[in-house]
Image (cartoon, rainbow over all chains, first blue to last red; front, top):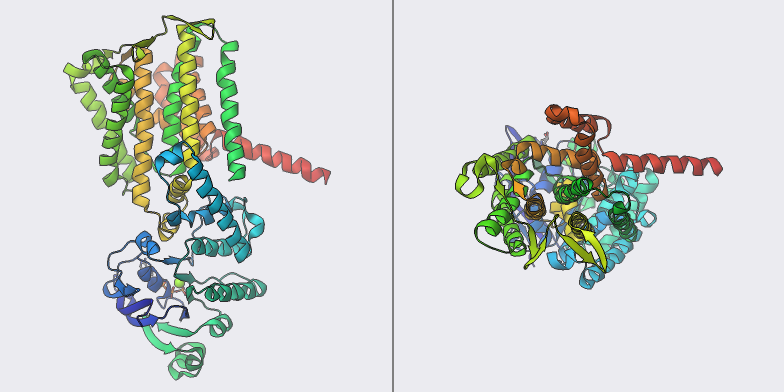
Length: 252
Length: 334
Ligand SMILES: Nc1ncnc2c1ncn2[C@@H]1O[C@H](COP(=O)(O)OP(=O)(O)OP(=O)(O)O)[C@@H](O)[C@H]1O
Ligand SMILES: [Mg+2]
């Protein structure tokens, strides 16, 4: 069985900084796979490499066995990869539901003619997209904000909205970069439940998160990064007792 | 979307009422002429707003496309005996192609670099129009035949009868331009509230977010650049036929700045707002006739002051103010 996401000897330098150095691991379809590590360990950089926002200095990423090479983020989205950001990326010039409908972009085949004259084919597609988006907003727990301007929403609601947008693209794998950052305990619990529900739908989840309780409870496997390098890799049980990890990270 | 659709229809309806009610209040040919000119320029501004207000890209050379449309239609109708409609349409396709070719590379630039590049595009077009004397008449300009729909001539100097009512050519032109503007607005609104429109707006809202959900941002930037150039070209062509005479000033830097100022003043991303911007900035010089020489300074000042004190523009600022007032009164009652 080939892994859904396979990372081999991946590296990224910024000037003199080795943000990610010689990192290899594989994520099987259906797993919840987490990446942890102290601040500046290279987690976000790793996600940016996987999703095509950065070009690696060395190594490669395979999605479904296919090397992603020079594929752009939008081309990776076409192949079933979607993500959220540590620095939330919401279109503040749109309403909440429009942000999620944006996630339907790839499933909405529209041409200029049906658009300009607002032909029935377009309206049908839009209605379906809106219904799907509303359903997803309900699913992530912001069903009350459908036509709210994104700019008028709370931080916590926007974090969930971003997940809904990623889900709208019907990804095979979703990458969540610190979804719990800035959330309170109640919201974090809701998030944990949400991630479980996402995984239950068969979507592979890659997660960067500092909240250890959340990560240890939810992950099938973990990758621990330190100074851009792999410190350990394994199941939560293995990671918990790994002496290197305890010394460098959990113990500290 | 339901809300947006509602809002959209209201805006269009309001505009239609204003357009068709205006003849009840004005009657002299000069005023009709001014209103026609404003409607045509407003149409170009609606197109520019798609690029600037919705997709968040800048063009400081848009008058170039307006000028190309005007000159192409003028040259084909006067020198080659084309009818105005095919001249306008072929010109629009040609300008769209030019915009696509120059847009692809320059839209990779951002901020000031994009400003400079579009500025250069406008300058180059203006220089060509100035220098190709044989075709364009150079700086002195050229006469343009009246607009015709396959032989049926629309001229300010004719008399027409519409549904049994006698109307002057001035009024006929005004009504025609008004309908063109309404169609331009309708198409723009349809575009904005669609998957393509969301993709365009997402380029403004967050290019990374757009790209990770599959939006080919480069493609959509080119697309909106082309569409806004076609808007300018069509309006330019009509403008030329209406005026009956054009000079390279229709493609000038000053005019590009005026178009941008209309977008910024009226409210980037508000279709009705930018029309108000066009009306205000076209009427201003009429009211302040003494400022002729200072026009550019005045527009520059308006541009600056708007960006500092009213970054959302006239209409959105007023709407926000109104909404707040209403919320306050509602809160007071509760
Ligand atoms: N675009 C960039 N240019 C230069 N250096 C960068 C860039 N992005 C990241 N870095 C550097 O690379 C290293 C890894 O950063 P990264 O953001 O990947 O860490 P992280 O593990 O996500 O940290 P955090 O937990 O704080 O989010 C840091 O030293 C950072 O300063
Ligand atoms: Mg990070």
